[in-house]
Structures are given as C-alpha cells and as structure tokens.
Length: 96
Image 1 (cartoon, rainbow, N blue to C red):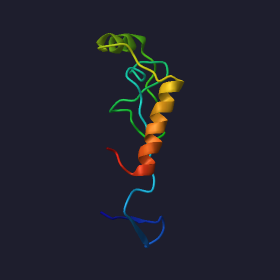
Image 2: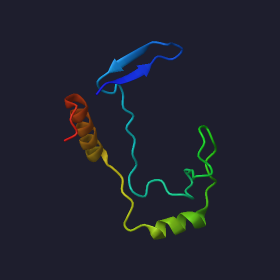
Image 3: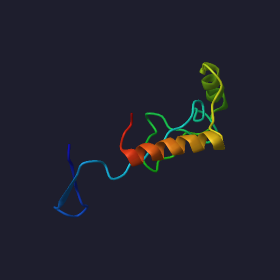
C-alpha cells in the first residue's frame, strides 16, 4: 500500500511504499515514575517544551510500592541485542 507525503511549503507529494523513517523510543519498567527527581509529566502537564512536574518524594514512594516487581534497566549487552534486532528488521522490512 502506498502512502503519500507532502513536502513542507510545497504542493508536491511523494508516494512511497514504506515509511522513510522511524522514531523508536521505549523505556524500561520502573525507570520513569511520577514524583522522581528526574521530573515527569501527567495528563495535565504534557505540553511540548512544557515544564516537568516538581519532585514529590511521597508520590514517588507510593508509585514504587505499587510496582509488581523491581525496576528494570538494560545493560550494555542487552542494549546491543535490542539494537541488533531493530537493525535486522529495518533492513529486511519484516517484523516476523
């Protein structure tokens, strides 16, 4: 299936059979909790270039207590595996 895109400030369109770019982002379980010193957003504070919510230690503790397991972070080896899989599927065009 083709998808057509317009160029900024132009009436010209380019049709492509697959996306030209992907932005892939994700975070690991427990790495971004409301109330942390790193800041967070919620439904009422989620604007581009908006300010993060102020740290709230009590809220952070409550969020940590509600977690069903420990927080998780990717080490270098696991990040390498994730990157290799993303590159593999980007090159083959197959997600299966």
